[in-house]
Length: 453
Length: 157
Image 1 (cartoon, each protein chain N blue to C red):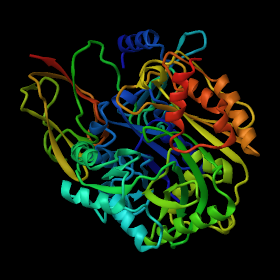
Image 2: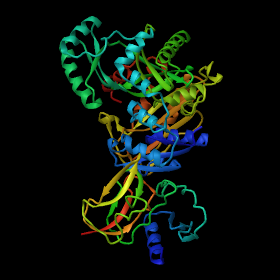
Image 3: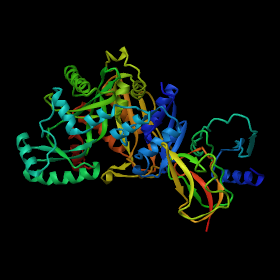
Image 4: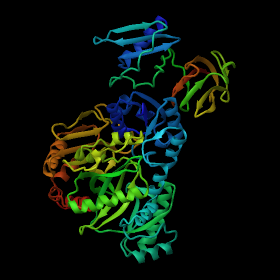
């Protein structure tokens, strides 16, 4: 087992990994930017090394400084968290060449499944259904029009190097396709350094349902159930739950099998997530794979009683997935709400600032994964997520009731947060009945505008 | 540390609401702790004793520095410092038996090499980036440094 791990991340996920290290008696080394000097993950770690000024590209994305810190700190392994360098195949390779274990899949897996167009191809070869789409990137307007005709409108233009909901736009006809095609290429070049885009059928009333995968070094791959992440705003997840209100046991079994089949086909190792779109008729289509631990991993942990971060570390250290993973059953229902420092009444504008009063929720069935504290100043350089509120219960109704109680109880003063929106979502009749698709939130806002509260 | 420096540290601790301060140089260690009534207590250790583990931080204290490098003593005067532009290991001279690049009193120009920071087996020459006279060397040769860590105190020209 590792003796010391460097956490190449910040915020709540850095704290999460540090906690797993403490549970396992592993020393933790935090790296931090000057803007994160007072951050909780720096306090919680056994050791900390400053790696640069605030902006991410000068600190958390500086591979050379992170590797130097790893060498200076004499660590055995690096946990990349999510975002930042977690899906950077080059970083995984650098770790390997410096004899530092990268806690995640191989660089090859990251490349094969991180390229969205390649991933689709791997899915097709493995016999996993994919949304009809272009065979690879479309490189000209003419090619795009031809492909769209074959697929049938409406289509979605997606960046090959994109992911996490970024770099996608719909098109309903040739005119919007050409406009969108050019704009998407420009955006993709800027955001991901790769302008390539591909086309996919735009599925109506889709549900975004993903499966948690774990694979060990011996090739044993299992899934730890699904998460329903349909409640999204501009393709950013806001609320996730498990089990999905949409799936019955049969569909869960079939999708789980497909997820494992695809992971096996690319010899996947460590934690990963297969994302699918599911329509109301129960047809599912592979969307993309995230080759890292995800933000919403606590939902799965609470439902199945598994410590996913601990399993990541164990797998990276060479341990096998034991028999306890052979017959996993969902034991509870869990819901996670992401708390962002954003102003819901101002188009969700990010609100960095100082938290002058913080009272976290508690009580039965409540878990708060957050790095904030009273007096903490949220730096402006990073994303606006300041915490994840998870509610757990023996059934969905209890989990919803507990989420409502916890959201009502939470106090965060000094910055605007999305908590009021969470409070409205859990009181919504469609949500409470478990009847929602990825269009839920836009309809929700339209309804709000019509009926002023 | 002399009594003047200890008094300056205690004053800085009170001003910044710090509760613990630890300093080590040449085998001598000194620890200053503010008790519950705010009164400072000073502990010293003689050379030869094992160094204490890294301080467990309290929410209002400075964050944990990386072990085993302790927090550097704040300078009595507020002269500017030359800070580390990278993470690595500090070396005062180009080779173990060679003389140091600079010492106290050395006059430097922006292009003067003041030290080496080794990272991933690459020796990086660090330049002064300003003109002035070196007044203090803040890091021991062979010790690890993080980004932004003050390496030298300098009196600008």
